[in-house]
Image 1 (cartoon, rainbow, N blue to C red):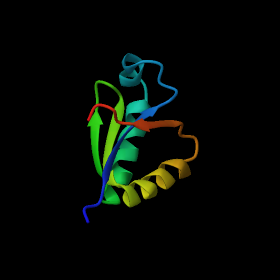
Image 2 (cartoon, one colour):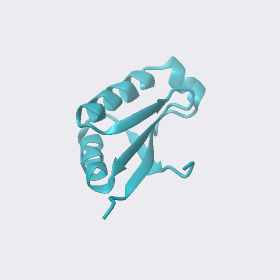
Image 3 (cartoon, helix red, strand yellow):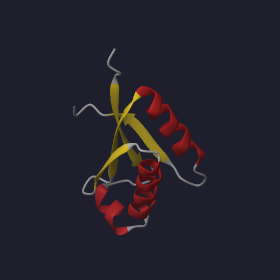
Image 4 (cartoon, rainbow, N blue to C red):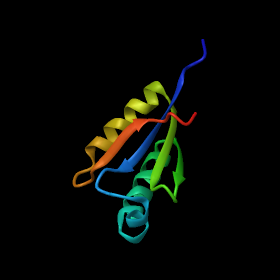
Length: 85
């Protein structure tokens, strides 16, 4: 049986617009998260112009990613289904 892969967008909930995202340290926060998730062998795509990460992963791997994202203190990430697929 093939495992279902899901895709979500992760963005900084305190970034009011992509323009502000590119000028502030929010980009570094997303890149740090991207690197952490890639170390867990989770496929991550960085949409720099939108200030978002796209995460593609099997459901059980995605649950690990959620736990990892939630464990980051002082980081306010917004997670939503990727409806672009």
